[in-house]
Image (cartoon, helix red, strand yellow):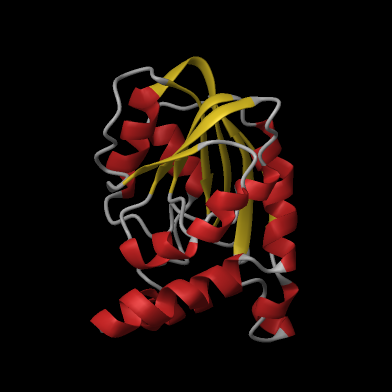
Length: 209
């Protein structure tokens, strides 16, 4: 699996997460970032074109995966905002308390092994008055879709780099001490297994403070 995880999976993730509907969701959230920004799960740098260089001082790019980080370099070189890499997991962010103005997380909470600890770490490093901007996917509202998410997840998760279908992003953030405002809905209609099953990839996007 190491060859798959290091060589194949990063390219699959880059292609899937760069799809049109996901890019439109990023475009709603990322431009709101300001000041010193921590992006948790920087991946291949898909968010970089959406940062407003007039608002952003720099992006601290937290990413533990070497394979996918190497794919980011083309976007980093073309970026209008400075990028500093932090090679560390979300559960242990190597920054002081209250040290960033904004945190950006897009389609990342699904893959972090100890997601509750990662959310607490984000809360720790965010300045008072700062904002955590998120675009995530998770548990659907439809009971039928939830049923199929649970059935598919044991096969999906190891093939998709640890991605879980059934997490609840707003709940994870609330339990870490954030106040959360969000919108939710279907992210990509191409990901219907069948019209009768409901949305299997269900989105949540918004702001946590």
